[in-house]
Image 1 (cartoon, one colour):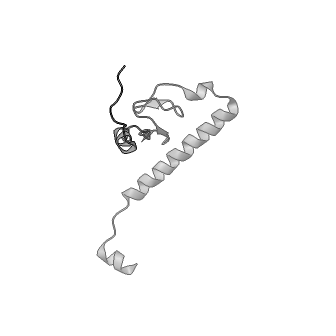
Image 2 (image 1 turned 180 degrees about the horizontal axis):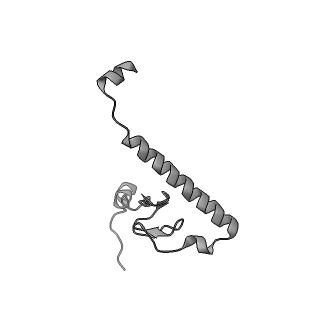
Image 3 (image 1 turned 90 degrees about the vertical axis):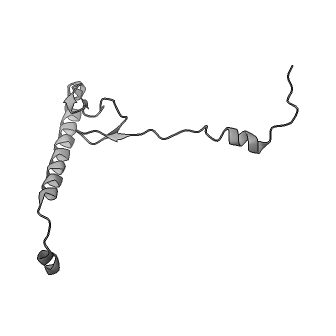
Length: 100
């Protein structure tokens, strides 16, 4: 039976194991609802993948859950529209900046 000639030090052992650790999963935002999901997967919250509906998530829910989910989706869409309007505003001129 093979027996090592010298004992492996804790330093050598730990250097060998340096790359063995858990990594955080990379998450992306869903383009429709904004929840964080794994890339290249269907969103479990809205059922969309690459901008088109793949699963009708609302069909499986009860009435209460369906109303709540629809309300969440509407509020997120309103927020997106408001942010789009804010970004379309004109940039301030030097005169306007000096007034403020």
